[in-house]
Image (cartoon, rainbow, N blue to C red):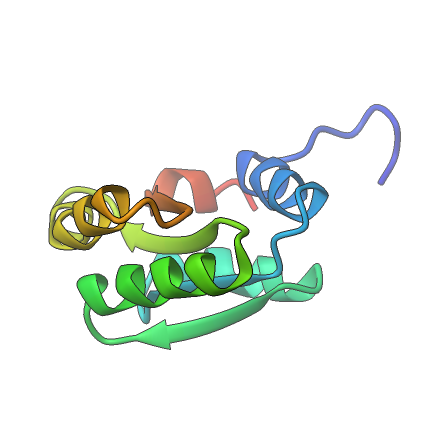
Length: 111
């Protein structure tokens, strides 16, 4: 990437996750999550798709517990975030390391 070329927010987020040694993401299959996940996969990360937000967040929480590195969960914004919120609360109560990211289409459109 040229020195004067700007990175998108999605690229910066992926770079930050990789800088901290995080390699896996768990999320709901669908746009915009899969668009973000495709970019992450191009940069060497792995994406595991689910059909329910709470299941994806639970999987990320368990991965965090097992590896002692934060698990990364991806949801869509608004209702997807709310659907994953109960799993996030459970992970917080259990002290499982977890990062839940709610992706909005505007972040992806700049890729």
